[in-house]
Image (cartoon, rainbow, N blue to C red; front, side, top):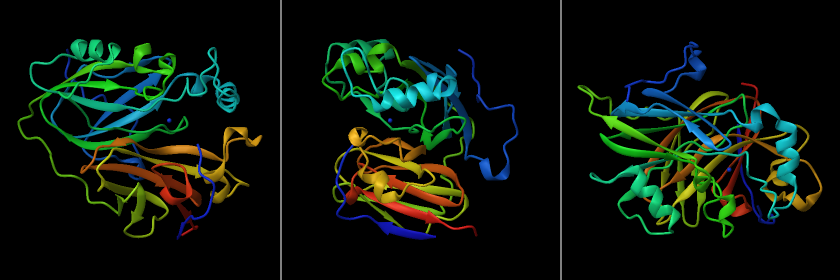
Length: 298
């Protein structure tokens, strides 16, 4: 496996207690740590259990909207510029897990968001980024008992609030209840990924073919996403980093997973299955904050 740090490229640029586990038995390569909670997202909804138990939890995110049912339409729409009648990110969803202080409610939190008010009593813990279906993305964290919200914040940072998935209704409450013997031990990682300086990524060792547990630590003073994408056949990592919608070419990469957000000073874990090929990891898709990873056949 070869790791290449890219430089000098143009910058540019997604109640009933239930474990919600899939009935399909996962292969050893697909196994995920802790209690697995399946969450499905589409335009504009989130489906998930109402109540789960505290402890080591992996949220596994399934894209079940138009990106699954009509992917060619979605990809074509994503290449078009945004207009008042067109949102290129309409069908791309991520997940944020938000913990509320005791005594606060999800309804109270949402009303504050609609009014544009600050909510210092709500803490975003991050969650899985987007993966192209039928693939899924995941994020592992330790949950304490309390009240949470599951949210898609895609579009929330834009001035055009018509593009906010949250304001279109993409949130739902989640109650985490005590467990008699919660598992709070994070899985042993295969690779450590440190986010340093202005979002630069440092990997502790090569990423190998097959199942890899990656522990991501944000050592900076601001939140960062951590995206994992596979470079499409016939394209290069350099091209994928520099690509913009106005280039007149199709997408040079496909989303594999990663994290929607990692708060400052925190650690999150993802589990990915890598095949032979080229990948890119980024916090911001530009040369200084991206890492190209080439995985061989062994």
